[in-house]
Length: 347
Ligand code: 1HN
Image (cartoon, rainbow, N blue to C red; front, top):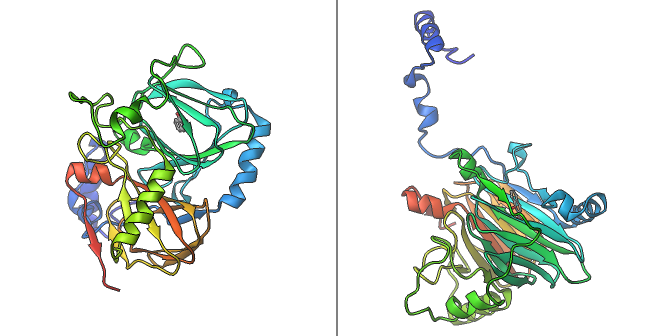
């Protein structure tokens, strides 16, 4: 029972409050408004090598159509059974086998896909299809129809990132199934890239997806080349190494409304100084191995591993070979609502 340290008089008083569904703020003020954030989430590393065989085993147990989405949720150890990887972010690994399709639907949470395996997976978003290759970052905006498929002869695996826990908090999750297996195509593949992804914009550019970038596939070959060239051209930032963020070409902001996304490149032997920020993050290792220190824990990572990074814990990276690491975080919300904070340390 709460208020154990309170005097008998006060506890007798509190007992009169409880049936009226009221409570004394002074007993909890320091907890609900602490001097600094205390994250309940745990730092955690999911090793891809351990999960891949289990994901493929799910492929023998049920079809993508049966599952609707055949996904292993990466659940934070602090939130077992709650389908979340940090307090605010959902991440999962999705499998589509050759020839399979995952039926069209839409929902209010935004989704991102970060491609891990396979070169012939596709997703259809709001009437346009994109082929998804390893390292591509692909967006499904809120309430956009989407279905997926695999036209190759190898399994297709990607990481899903969704802002579901945020929408759950706001009790604003809606979803709809589409009446057909696949939503019809209304534009040729590459249309959005041609209009928005070449450093050009339509003369009267309006945003077809509201606060979400109209580019819905940021291909890895371009991202990687941009990072490699940027690293050659400048001294890396001590805390960020070489980091480029995915941006919405219409307003220069984050590519997605709630989730910030970026990629960090470190060369072999390079490291970052610790920093902390209020956003919680999920990182996915595209290439390379090294270690990430989160608070007082250090995790060694290899290619394709996924790590949950709770907010406001000191984070730093060390690369044992050339690394490319994708991040998504709830920072876009922190910034829009005015409570984003960060602190950079010199050692
Ligand atoms: C969803 O719609 C997808 O479209 C993936 O691939 C993961 C997790 C929770 C709710 C909806 C998808 C999801 C999801």
